[in-house]
Length: 84
Image (cartoon, rainbow, N blue to C red; front, side, top):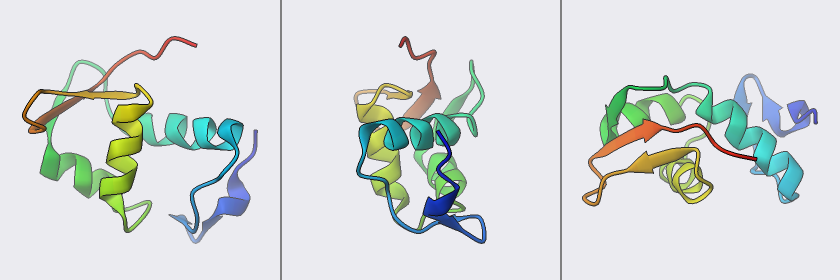
C-alpha cells in the first residue's frame, strides 16, 4: 500500500485511519530501528521526531502494535520481528 499522500517534505502530516495504511506506516517507522539493538527513550524520540512532531504517540503505537518492545520501566526499547 502506498502511503505517500500522508507525507509532505518527508514529514508525516496525519496518521492514517485505515488499518492497512497504519500498518504500512508502522512498518516503515520500525525499519528505522535495528534488530538486536537497545535504544533508550531519548534515542527512540530522536528517531521518531524526524517523521512526526508527536513522537510519543508514534512510540506508543509502535509498542502497542508489537513493532517495538520496552522494558517495564519504559527506559529501554528494542525492535522485534513482528509475526503477521
